[in-house]
Length: 207
Image 1 (cartoon, helix red, strand yellow):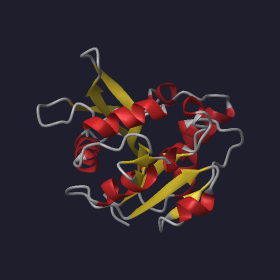
Image 2: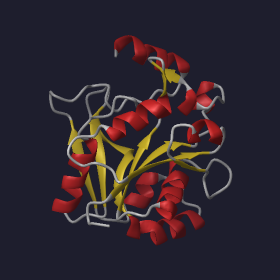
Image 3: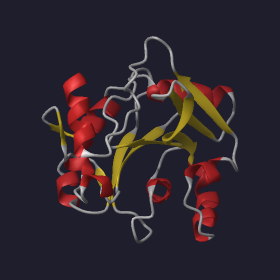
Image 4: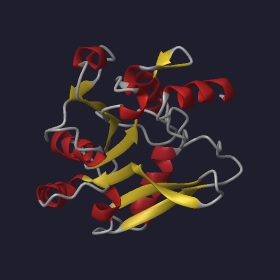
């Protein structure tokens, strides 16, 4: 294990409530399941190859396992949100750093891992989080796109045991650097997350 050894974690454990309760990670994007599209994009990252990639999913586990990576259900009950996925990833991670990405943003930047890693190391931070321009033109944090040190596991356990569920409420307790993806080279849809089938189909048409 080295300082830069990174495990990638695909968050696919949600209810998919705004998609009518279907398993979002298994919906097709341009003919490929979103989770597979995300996996391939992680495998093709520039400059900072991942040591391992895992998926957090809470149903259809065999379908996710067929992608050829380790699949873990949330270690907490009740679809407790993205932080539950963070917790499961930190518990299972065998590298020094954990990168999280959602399964429903299939166009995230190809240099995501490299830029988050560079920022985390240069700032000696605990967490590096992406930030991007949204439809209103403002740059906002994208909290599910995080690179974090595995030493944060104990902190997250305590936070969730106390009832905490919001990512920003937890990350604000630690040294966090924001990495802005707002240059002309960044696809304006890079961090768009498809919450409904309509949004997913619309993203397909313009990608």
